[in-house]
Image 1 (cartoon, rainbow over the protein chains, first blue to last red):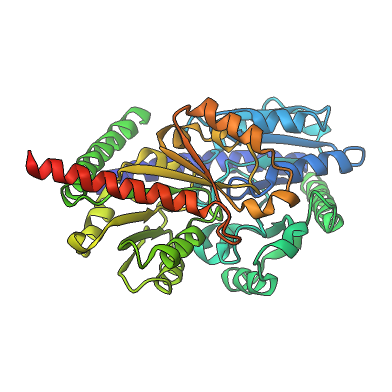
Image 2 (image 1 turned 180 degrees about the vertical axis):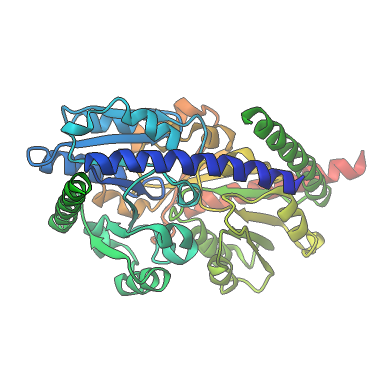
Length: 230
Length: 230
C-alpha cells in the first residue's frame, strides 16, 4: 500500500510538472515575471500585496492569482486596491495551489497588458514547496512574530525560494526576535537567498521590495526581447 | 487517476482512524486527557507549552509528544522545562502527525505516571484537521498578529476544535487586530468553541488556560473511575 501511494503521487506530481513547464513557457514568451508567494497563514502576504498594488499601481501593471482553502477573502481585499483582474482560486481543502489552477487563471488574463504576476499561495510552509506553479521565483515570507528558526524547521521551502521577506518589522521592539539569528538560519539553509526586511504597515523597507520587483520586470523584458530576436 | 488517488487516500485514512481509536482507548483506560495542539507555524504552541510546563510542572505530570517536519528544535526547547520525557517525532516532510506516530510515542510513556498529554502537531492549519490522533480534544491556536479571519479561512480546523486559544495578546496595542471581529468569526465557524486569550510572554490569561487543563484532568479521572467500576 505505501508503494502504491507513492506511485500515484509521483504520477500526479509528474503531470503537475508538465503543466508548470507550460505555464513557465507562456510567461517567458510574454516577458512576465511571476512570483509565487508562500508563507505561514498570517505572515502578511495579502497585506504586502495590498500595499504593493497601492504604491506601484501607476508604474507597473500587476496581475494577481490568489489561492485560498475555502474563502475568497484575500481576493476581495486585493480587489479594493487595483482596477485590474484579481483571480481567486478556492482549493477546497487542498493545502497548496497547483499548476493546472494557475494555467486556468492565466487564460483569463491579458498577458500583453501585464508587467508582472503575483501568485499568492495558500498559507502553508510545507505543501507548496513541492508544487511547481511555473513561477519565475518563489518568495517566502515570515514575520518577526513567528520565531527565528522557521528556515531550519521548514528547510525545503527556504531552499527553493530565491528571496525571503521578513515582515512586520515594526513589531521588532515588542517581540523576542533576534534578527541576526534569523539571518544566520536563512544563510545556513540557503546561502543564495536574497533577504528583504519590510513593514507593510509602517512602510520601512518597502523601497527594497519594489526595487527587487522592478529589476525582475526589466530582466524578464530583456529576456523576452532576446527570445524574440533569436 | 483522480478516483484511484481518492481510493488510496481513503484506505490510508481508514487505517489512521483505526489506529486513532486504539490510541483513544488506551488514553481513556489510563484516564489521561490528550490535547492535540494545532496552529500556523509561529502561533506560539511551543512557547505556551514551555510556560505551562514551567508553571504547572509541580502540580500535574505532563507528557509531551511534539511533531516537526525536519528538526527536533521544539522538543529540545520543551525538554529544558521538564524532567519528564519529551517525545520528538520528525515527519520527514509530512504536514501533520498521524495516529501511528502517536501510538508509537505512547508506548514509550508510563501512562500510570501521567496526568495529561500534549500532542504538539506540525505547524499547519490545513492537513492536521483531517488526521485524528486519538486525542480527547483539539486545541487550535492563533495569534493576534495573524489577522482575525483565520477561522473562516480554515474552517475545518476550527470546526473540529473544542477550544481556541488566541495568543500573543501582549501585542494587541501594536497590531490592527479587532478582537470582537475575531470572536464573531470564531462563533460563526463553531458556536461551541471555548475561547481563551493568553499572553505566554506577559502571563495574562494563563490562569484560564490552566483552569481548563485542570478541569479536563478531573473529568478524565472521573471517567476512568466509572469505566473501571462499571
